Length: 154
Length: 154
DNA sequence: ACGAATATGATGCCAAGGCTACACTTTCTT
DNA sequence: AAGAAAGTGTAGCCTTGGCATCATATTCGT
Ligand SMILES: [Mn+2]
Ligand SMILES: [Mn+2]
Ligand SMILES: [Mn+2]
Ligand SMILES: [Mn+2]
Image (cartoon, rainbow over all chains, first blue to last red; front, side, top):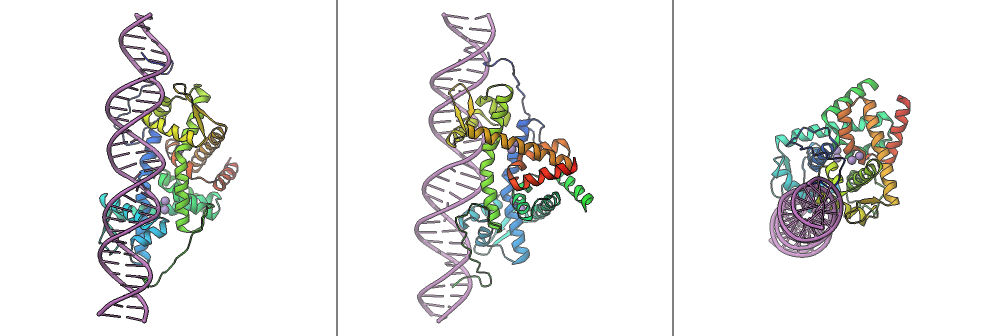
């Protein structure tokens, strides 16, 4: 029989995706979210480069992200694999329709997160810095609450 | 000469740690922060297990985190390597003084983040869920702003 | 006391995301 | 029209953090 007596808590954890309110479920969801973070930042950045300069070259992307171009190219490979981007060799990276939609959502979320931090009293630099990581963990529900909060403050 | 004309922006990026207000600097800092996230969650959890049950066994830790025990043991190895924990084979994991301090800071930050989300109007479940990822990206400066904000609301 | 059940630890595998180094392509300048 | 400079792509290496599997250690029930 078992090895430790008073706590045989053997939950089964169905093949869920939604979130599950247990502690393990929260950590699992946090890991899922984290695995999207890099894709989100790339999509947002590529859209931004297209919106401003017109092109999204691996070297531009790499410089803006603070990584080497080799690293950027590998990430771009993943973006392509996930159906978020295409690339013409030596001619830059382009977002698919799905990639564009992701970028738009991510950009709006990023801005909203910064706004909320500022509204709470976080100094501008810290707000910009922390938002870069925080944004990825803000769920739709939370985002809606943020929007309501800002309406009230404004 | 170069290949693209109007944007030869070749900053050097000294061996900084502080943060650097450039976009690349923000991404770099976000990556540094992320590399601490797992250690923080383990430290917080081990402290919690000690506070309640008395022991922090690899299997307990694994179950609470939603990973296999093999994964937990590997992470514990890293905690030991970083001087945050010790372990007596088959007898559980223990935080060092430094580990205890980290755990205490992380726990306080976690609670404060949840409180702020709640105060903003985020539903309890979403607040708990999102805080698990957000917490790691909340800097000291931001945390202070959170504390001030809560004082004002209360 | 002993066997079964469970926990623990070690290994090996994998993908993600960093890096450096090197080869190749494109573009710019002369 | 070259040649130089910069960008691009590929390959190989590393660490982190997942997993499954297997062997070993501990504990519990009888
Ligand atoms: Mn980001
Ligand atoms: Mn962003
Ligand atoms: Mn956490
Ligand atoms: Mn936490």
